[in-house]
Image (tube, rainbow, N blue to C red; front, side, top):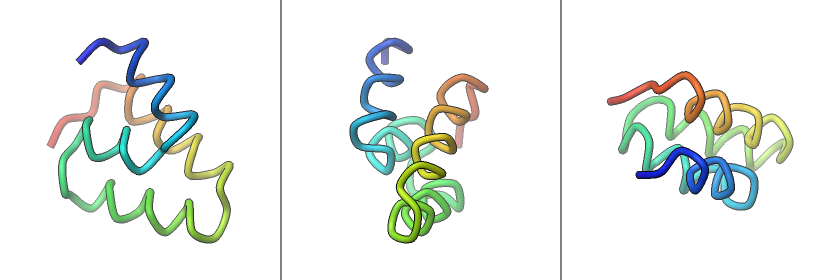
Length: 56
């Protein structure tokens, strides 16, 4: 998927971007927890996943 599109999704819906990048892995679960408690760290984590190119 286009990295720019994933970055936009990471800002709007961080868990979706994390899922699209790594699938249903520990990074996805970490992102959900971060978004439930603190939305901004969830965004930062999703952006980091997209920019680092982490795959499942």
